[in-house]
Image (cartoon, rainbow, N blue to C red; front, side, top):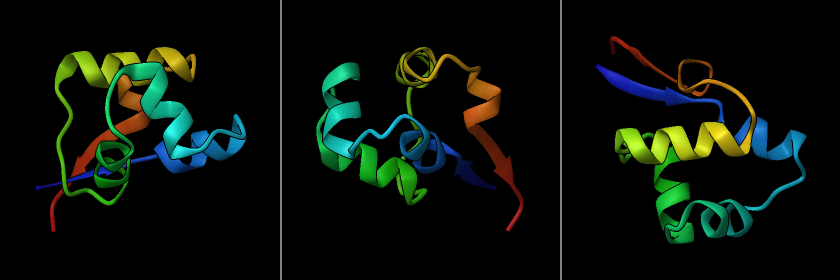
Length: 67
C-alpha cells in the first residue's frame, strides 16, 4: 500500500511553501517534501499537526492506495 497526500494542493491554497509548513509543524523542509512524494509516512502527531494547520482532517489529507 502506498500513502497518498493532498498536502501540496493545500499548501497552494494557503500560499504556503514547504519551508513555511515545516516551521509551523516543527520538522525540516525535507520531511515535508518526502511526505508529499510518498517517501515518508508521518507519525499520527505530525499528520494531526499538518491537518490542524490546514483546518481539515487527517483523512482529507492522507489516504492509502494499493499499487
